[in-house]
Amino acid sequence: MGCSDADYAYLREIVFHQSANLIDPSRNALFDRRLISVTRMAGVSSLKDLVAMLKGRRPAHLHRAVAEAMTINETSFFRDVKPFDLLRTAILPRLIESRRATRQLRIWSAASSTGQEAHSMAMLLLERFPEVASWDVEIVGTDISSRVIEYAQRGRYRRLEINRGLPASMLLRYTIRHGEEWEIVPSVRSLCRFVCANLCAPLPPLPSFDLVLLRNVLIYFSLQDRNVVFRSVHRQMASDGYLLLGNAEQAEESTDRFNIEFSEEERSYFYRPVQML
Ligand SMILES: C[S@@+](CC[C@H](N)C(=O)[O-])C[C@H]1O[C@@H](n2cnc3c(N)ncnc32)[C@H](O)[C@@H]1O
Image (tube, rainbow, N blue to C red; front, side, top):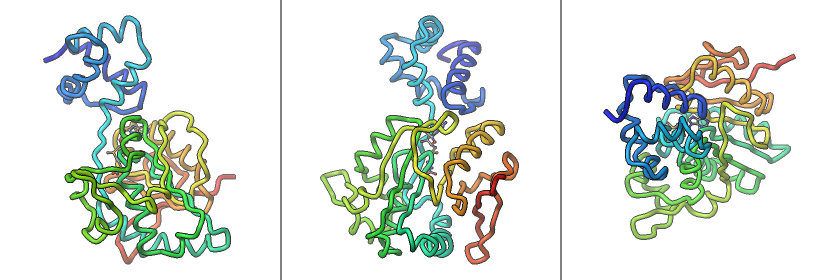
């Protein structure tokens, strides 16, 4: 074990304070593994010394680095398949129809991690709804971790990442190989923009979104913080927009700002914003 229970509790507090992520005490060992690089960055030789430094001088950048290092950035192209079928068959056709007059679409991959979700969205649009190629389309990926945002901005993926969820036909059409990395083509990348943002804090300037993908991040928050996130997502959405959550996530228990809708065809749920008075 790297440090005392009190020290782990302190590290959990830092993470909660910085990112609202709850880490169960049963996962203390994760701090030992994940904070090796932060320990090195701080110029100390053990987790115990890192905690002493964090408690003493309270350097803000190290507090942020601890929270970032503890984020779970698991993602993949076209993750879970079904939501992308739902987007293709039900949500995007309706949305595109309703935006035909303005020819503008704003999509938010909230908690985008390394960008596969946003890039999948762009590929889906180009592949299935080619008419929007001439529209004003922006897919904004945001994440609390500057490391994953920089990765997404670079738009290059390794074999392991490419092999997870990207169909062979899309690999050929939408990537360019550079040795052992595959770069997303400019026509896809130009639709996507990535910025750092903490979902539990005031958001940076963002447009009003027609579609929000808020997937596989609520699970890390308390019920109360989920409510905070739903409130700001609601504020950031067009009144006739669409919201998709992850498979294990739901809105009903923590907010009354969204109504659930069910797609018979895809046997899937999505949400629409409630009009606030
Ligand atoms: C498991 S990944 C999900 C990625 C993608 N949405 C998906 O479903 O594949 C969760 C992401 O949420 C980000 N995250 C965690 N807490 C956050 C917060 N408070 N604000 C913004 N992003 C956060 C993490 O950095 C991580 O990249």
